[in-house]
Length: 207
Image (cartoon, rainbow, N blue to C red; front, side, top):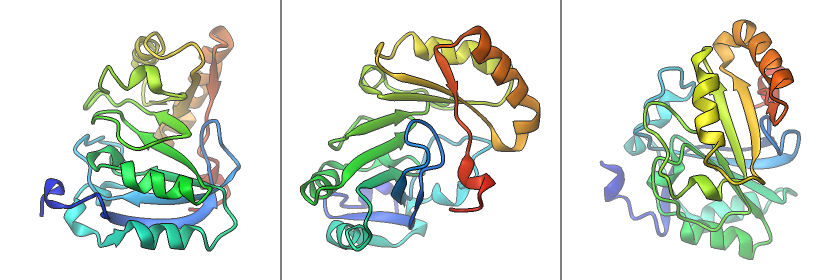
């Protein structure tokens, strides 16, 4: 089943969903309900959730089911991630959460047109399929995963295209963290507009 065959106005392919702490970026440490949608055509070689790429491999859940599940927890924040969540139309999903009083955050590569109504947009561009130009000025947070030294120049290209209010983060790729974290620290000290993002959920062993 192709992603385009799914009626995402009422149902979405959900790889997993769980209540945890946001481990990265601006909202690090906040209680958040994560919904990881299936489907991705970006294809990062270092992706740690490659099983999310095939939308057809994951069960469909209705928007009512998702909202009902999240509102059974005390959280005030839902994070929609993937895969690449913008492969789906998220207008009705986000409207339903906001009507329920839940803030909506998205983590996206920006490679597909923006849909949904968002309280916070975390843009994490990837070299494998770049973000659409229209999405860049809408980002609240630019989070660049650093895999090697060339990624610093690449990050600066996108920093020049987001708004001046956008928060800028550099995050070490997990498997190369020991190598690249010292480089990131030195880079941020020389370029203090950037901040460090660490995947603290992996350090404290939560999803």
